[in-house]
Picture 1 (cartoon, helix red, strand yellow):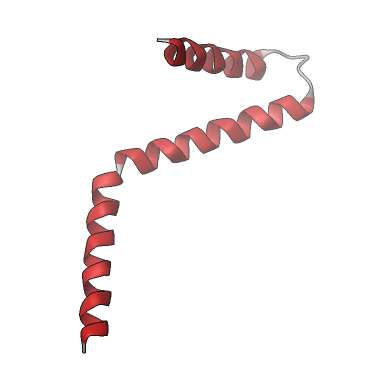
Picture 2 (tube, rainbow, N blue to C red; picture 1 turned 90 degrees about the horizontal axis):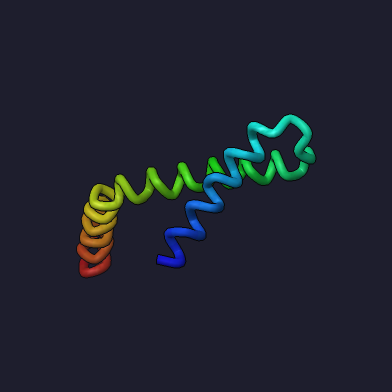
Length: 68
């Protein structure tokens, strides 16, 4: 429960910093970096089964290559 509340506060704070016109410039850069990193993590999480399957096929190819 604590983690959910904390992540909700961070998300609301990020949006508030983007909307606020007089926020310091370094905070705006940090917020945009945070947003892009979270989007990247989300994309990795959504494609995790495909990535895992690709990883297994590449591992099997390498193992068969080294057994020769």
